[in-house]
Image 1: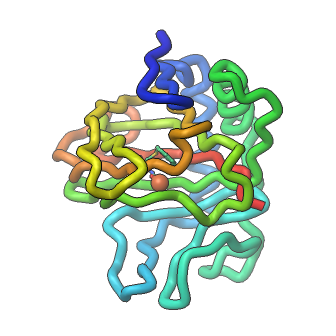
Image 2: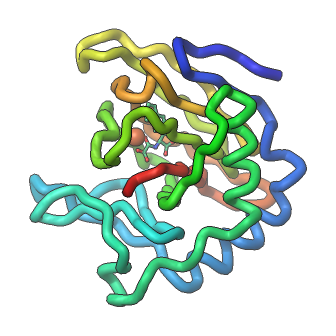
Length: 203
Ligand code: MD3
Ligand code: FE
């Protein structure tokens, strides 16, 4: 089922369903190599969302700013490779939404524990805003906030559940967005967490 959330923003409910067993297995292997950590914002705050990355580039934040890095600052080693079980459904979701040839080089892995949230922000650290961002939701459901071009635009609320995939491109690529604080819960496969994979062409 395809839902249009806005210009260039397409929600594919359950699109990752057939790949979920492989995705969850590769998620466990990936975060065994590059563990989740709470990054620090440039303003000095600890993010409530725990993060890791896979692929050639990984998104990082510290006192010096937000950027993409080839190395995991925790280990000094390259990020683990992006598993095919992640890449293939992300590329096919992008194509289904009209973005043929999407070739992500970065996958940010977010983990939300109860109470974790993401305040409204724009994703602007990537080089080419003509490329979409693809997100895959896993585990507990969350309420996603989908705003407008201005921080003050009242955001729409969308519930994102295990296996849902969203493609954000075109005019929606630079909208303000966030995630409401996570409610308590236990997912049968993934426990008391929500995970979100975001695929980007960063470099
Ligand atoms: C809309 N993550 O990592 S994914 C992020 O659920 C981020 O973890 C949220 O926002 C999460 O930066 C939302 C959906 C998403 C990702 C990127 C977008 C929506 C977007 C970029 C532009 C517009
Ligand atoms: Fe974002």
